[in-house]
Amino acid sequence: MKVLDAGCGAGRNLVYLHRRGFDVWGTDGDEQAVTTARAQAAILSPSLPADHFRVEPVERMSFDNETFDVVISSAVLHFASDEEQWNAMLREMWRVLKRGGIFFARLATDIGHETRVRPLGNRRFIMPDGHERFLVDEAFIVEATRRVGGTLVDPLKTSVVQNMRSMMTWVARRTM
Image (cartoon, rainbow, N blue to C red; front, side, top):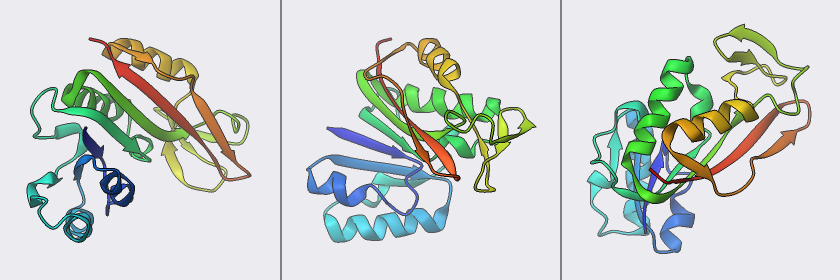
């Protein structure tokens, strides 16, 4: 399977994916992080071409339409500056996902901390741990899934990290 780690950072998911034999690709807007990911990938798979890891923002990727069987977005979407950027990132990840492909995202949510987050406007909040993030809720994700032509593969799940933050797991299939 061809897997894109959209917002791969320094390659936090590389070891797991490479060891399981996936054809791994990554993109991130941080040049230093991509350099680190490339170096790590070269150790894991010396024959892997350097172009598998690209320096580009998730909302403007250069991959062709419907290139990947799976797109992973782990701890990326909550860094959106506003709803416009969040939607641009989602549309772009969906664009490169094949029909029938799986989208997996882990992102910050207010679920479980609804009364402990401080709203700043435009879905930006100060979380209990003091970090500022773009937060989603169930209705927002269900509507986003419908809007891009997807279906939930699994019910939305949220992990509450005591007095710090809540993280949602969102798994959807591209049906359109």
